[in-house]
Amino acid sequence: MDTVIVLSYIASAVLFIFGLKMMSRASTAVRGNLLSALGMGIAVVATLVDRQILAYHWILIGIVIGTIIGAITAVRVPMTSMPEFVALFNGSGGIASLFVGWVEYHNHFGAYEGFTGATAVPLIATYLAVLIGGVTFTGSVTAYAKLAEKINSRPFLFGGQQVVTGLLLALTLASGVLFLIDPNSTLAYAALMGVVGLSLVLGVMVTIPIGGADMPVVISLLNSYSGLAGCAAGFVIGNTVLIVSGSLVGASGIVLTNIMCKAMNRSLANVLFSGFGSAAAATGHGKGAQGEVKPITAEDAYYVLEAASSVVIVPGYGLAVAQAQHIVHELGTILEHNGTEVKYAIHPVAGRMPGHMNVLLAEANVPYEQLVEMDAINPTMATVDVAIVIGANDVVNPAAREDKISPIYGMPIINVDHARTVFVLKRSMASGFAGIENPLFYKENTRMLFGDAKKSVTLLVEQFKTA
Image (cartoon, rainbow, N blue to C red; front, side, top):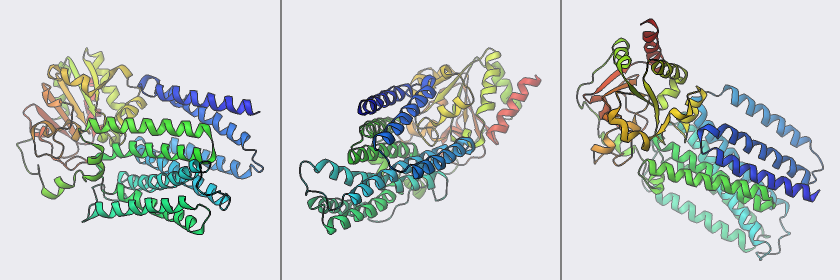
């Protein structure tokens, strides 16, 4: 039986690795997700058999409840709400790791032979599982509240905030030292409970200063935290596959976070502590008229698109809000049948979580080969006849290139303003999620098609069908 368990864990680890690798490409991401799910299923079954559990009724109840919640979530949660639910899932992993560390220590309290070579790894792992798990849980809940607009999405800053956060972190580290010195003492148990409370407060403190525009980075980072917490929990209970899977999630999350930061030309420290967006909101920089906007009707836009030989569609969060991905795909298909080359330009931080636009367009069956990354589309943008911006704002804002005092100056953007004509589909002239005005709207080659994105694109499709 032991051999079967070991082989099951090895198979699970291999499936995790291959699944993660396949998720790096849109064309294989679905299969990668299924492989990873299969690996997790094998790992769960093997662990339940390996641990010789005496009573399975609570586990079966948990499986039933979890299955119901997962099924309802998968069916009913719209794509617009997926980022905040990803945040909640990250938080669930964090709180689970916290409970594993806490319960395992409680069950063995008084049996530790001090802080020795034999107990060092499980004790340190217990501390880390509780600390990282607590930060992940409340940080994820706070991120969910910002994304779901349960609280204001702008950065929440106050005087001495970083000092307070630093003191909390210092207290957390000091509590960890007290816990490790004599793990069998009542003081050590109290110290660990202190770590539980402090970690929960720290999670809120490190997330509230982060504005909504930085949420893709935060979601990625919290995902990494949940993996690291799971890895620590694996060391606590001596479960190899949990260590492997947690390490993979933690490492991939850190890599993805780094990619997100580079996409915004900012450091992780700047994202976590700068309160991005607050400066613009406080100073009013970029607000006020910068020229005259030029509205366009769907009928006039149709004539331009009908004559275009190349069109680039740039999706943003507004596309998800309007649930316009299917009608946009229909417009793209009509344009292709009309002899137009159609591409979809994807910015790494478009939307509210990493890969948000890729998932949204995949749901509408947009061909993978039409999805083009920012670095690949920008060199050819000057040859594009029409760039259609649907719900995107900050990722196409020329202020990132032109305005040295703009909060987003230096951030790589999709250079839609270099196209011959730009159609911007927006409900109004309101600024984007970062609260920064966009000079693109006032460019000579820009035309504003106001209204709900889905309705506007539907009107364009009808123009083609009735022509």
